[in-house]
Image: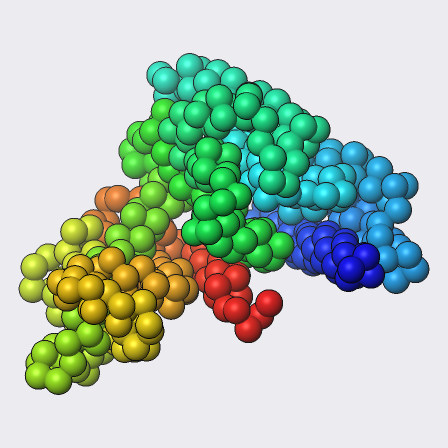
Length: 500
């Protein structure tokens, strides 16, 4: 018995050290790519001059990247020799925390996990909660260099700083006083306060508050989902993707109060085609509009269209697939043959036809992208329902005389959602690409609205002289799509029992 417990403890320690090594390796790779990107961007080809502030940031990124590389090698060496990370190696994490001053969230996240030898799920969520808040504050603070700011900017920044201070205190308290399956009474009060801080769009705060309130070791359903979240937090790529998505969601909400919309949409002929600077971090377009502000406001459109155009077919296709898979025979034939007709039409052509018929606006774009995705979700749900419907608890519900609709939506659908969740996270990225593609063709969001496809279309005409007008919105689209793909892969691995 004792040998079995010792072996289980060794496996747990090895799992935690491997997680820290994966975080360190991922941070090293991504930070290296960002360093190279900053170094290339530090030279202004148009004016044949070096952007000193960008070059300084690139040098700092390279310094922390090399330091992170050394720590990663040392972690691997410690694990191979003793099976655990030495205290001296963990202490370097305090120095790596200074990477936050350069905005390098990847190294900062790796260092915070390195400092905590036994990081719980609550600690991981608290880390990303604080990093999201600090990133929102840092990005919003760049407006200080602009000629004018929004009227609500001072009050909003003060509130964000107060919330960040509160979240830092929570992180310290969790790191010092919380254990894996025991919650002190004061944590429940803190959890309620965390739920209120989620009004800034920081979903990590919402997740942490809910986890703390529902931390009941006797709740089997809650324990199952906590285990899923623990698997996700062990995946550095998935957490980085989730961080970027939730950061964009949070900045989209906070930008209502910290960004001035007029800078993104009103023409300023005194600032036409200016190269990146502190006043205009990503430069200005041919109408003198701040590209940085336009990309921030464009994130709101991409997230709204991507999420809603995925949620609608998930709901509609899920209901149709559940009914089709459960009833079978004639009902199945009628529903699936009608969906086959819709499935035979290419999604992008269907979207173009709908927009051409009803006009180019956001609502029609969402409808066009949603309708074409219904058949694939219906098929996914139908396949899952046909498997779950054969389980014993479904037969028991039938024997007890429950209505068929109650059996479908109370017993079958909740146990068939895992494939739908994975598919939805993987296809939101496709919806974002379709949104930008249709906007690029002039068939998506209205041209005057700052949307990434619209920005990319405008910047494509200046690829030779002012390439940054197309490069930055392109990078934003790539980063968001990759983030959803990383998150989808992480959720798939977390929900797959064969992976564990």
